[in-house]
Amino acid sequence: MFVDSACKALQQLHFSSSRWHPLRWSSLPGSSSNLNFSHSISSSGLSGHASDTAVHSASDALSKQIYKCIEVTLVEQETVGLIVLNRPEVLNALSEDLMHELVDALRVLDSMQKVGAMIITGKGKAFAAGADIKDLKDKNIADIFMLEFPSKWNDVSKIKKPIIAAVNGYALGGGCEVALMCDIILAGEKAVFGQPEINLGTIPGMGGTQRLIREVGKSSAMEMILTGSRFLDAQEAYQRGLASRVVAGSNDELVKEAISVAAKIALQSRPAVVMAKAAVNSAYELGLHEGVKKEQALFGATFALADQKEGMSAFIEKRQPQFVHT
Ligand code: CAA
Image (cartoon, rainbow, N blue to C red):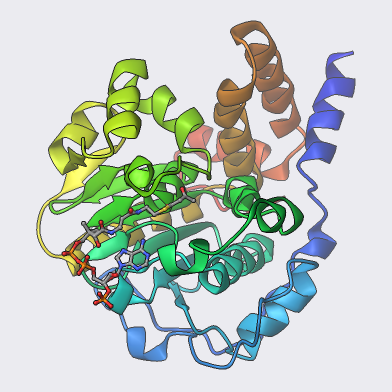
């Protein structure tokens, strides 16, 4: 019975190594002390939206370097994917193109065996100041439903590997909601979190009403969402558990710290990390009893991994584990 549910848990995680295929794009000599955006995979020419279909098409998109609203870089011996939202002239407002690119890039990185964790940050003084209001203004209800807009953007929360949000400034509206879909939020000193959609005559549409309440509690979430003017600065976000900590210094130092955290995660067994993330996230969706059952199934599933044997052997033999990610 237990073995059955453990196997099911493994299947649900889709651990087929055949889905993992490294891209043949020029790798980057990244390290936490050597951020080199000049090598980043960014560029121009994505016409319309990148396909939201198979990882293959997304990997083609990356390898052909056709993103125009984001930059993607592999750092830390290609074990960490760094995504920079790159529309600083509009405070990285989340246009439809940007969100399609972001979701595609995350899917590609998720599919790459070598990559153990991802980071999202913003160029300039914002993480992201929300959905692009110019994109939104003339939409009608049919657009919202037929284009699954912005519900499709919730796909950020379906990525299996951990994502760190390095929030360097404004994270407002959809920007706050993207950060909330990440697994760890590191706040720079100038981080500002808020849900000002009510000022525009609308409400959060990317999970803000559901996720924010879980982080800051009902009263604060209500005040933020209903007034549209109650923002949290970095310290308050940390004190309330929205951010895991505040990183002092410049944006570069924030990104450097995020890379250092991501690199530590990337050293661990990939499948164990993915199972741990899935187990923690089930606390969002399940009651305690069901959640603990799911955790037990995933815990059991780790005993089917070579990495579990290696991790425990290494401890007993007083050496560093050499994980093979299977
Ligand atoms: N969409 C489109 N453009 C935006 C934008 C957005 N969300 N946020 C900022 N910009 C643009 C501004 O229009 C401005 O462009 P121009 O130079 O062409 O005028 C540029 O970015 C710089 O912005 P500001 O001059 O306003 O900068 P500021 O420092 O004075 O103010 C700010 C910063 C308080 C963040 C302010 O820009 C602001 O209030 N932005 C809107 C925030 C917001 O309402 N977000 C929610 C969007 S709706 C949403 O996200 C729905 C959802 O849940 C899915």
